[in-house]
Length: 128
Image 1 (tube, rainbow, N blue to C red):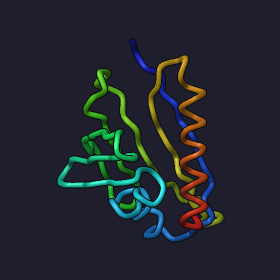
Image 2: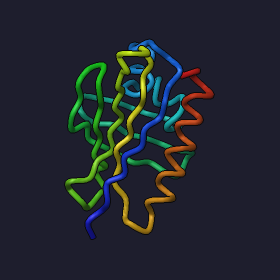
Image 3: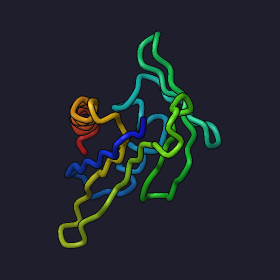
């Protein structure tokens, strides 16, 4: 089954590209809001939630202070990925975080709710 693309945009409070980049591209940053444990080594990432759930991903694209794109290794659809992209509004100097993800059509709403919850956690814990 081909997954549908989901693109979400969240306004951030921070104007610091370094703070935002650390939150979306480093183990320490991702552990604050995305997963309980994150191990990044070369182009490989291991995400853990609690003691039961572990997922591995490959970093398939990265551009410093712009975006990082992951592909889940257990994902059957080779073209699917999730991407965390930071965009700066040149007029205000504020950033938005753009999430691109893929999900089955019946799971799109649930996937959006999951990202909404994760981004709320990001903002609450980091002040972004």
